[in-house]
Length: 135
Image 1: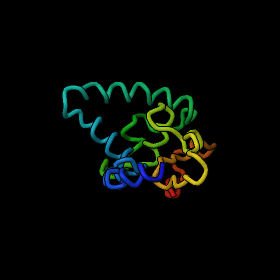
Image 2 (image 1 turned 90 degrees about the horizontal axis):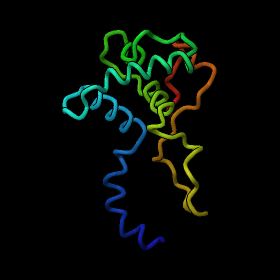
Image 3 (image 1 turned 120 degrees about the vertical axis):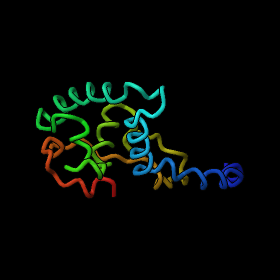
């Protein structure tokens, strides 16, 4: 196992960055939301439909009216990756760290695995401080 991991180390190191929480969630959302490619067309409408259910079920009706208002700042320039991460987790696009099966003993370096915040009661409070959610 160790030998094969060493042989793959070059590739693991090169591409691990793309699967870090902050990078993956941001890139996936911004790429799909841009609808620049034909296969991405309809994402915004689908995401809005899903967000209305998320708003009802998870945010208990307290969230912003639209997904974009919920995940961007008031000027629509800064994406709140923590909020998108929770939305993607609810959708099943990403999984919580606790759901990732453990590797064999001694292989526990999971520092690059996605670890979205757990759903908490504070999630319903839209104005909560999300700054520590990905630490």
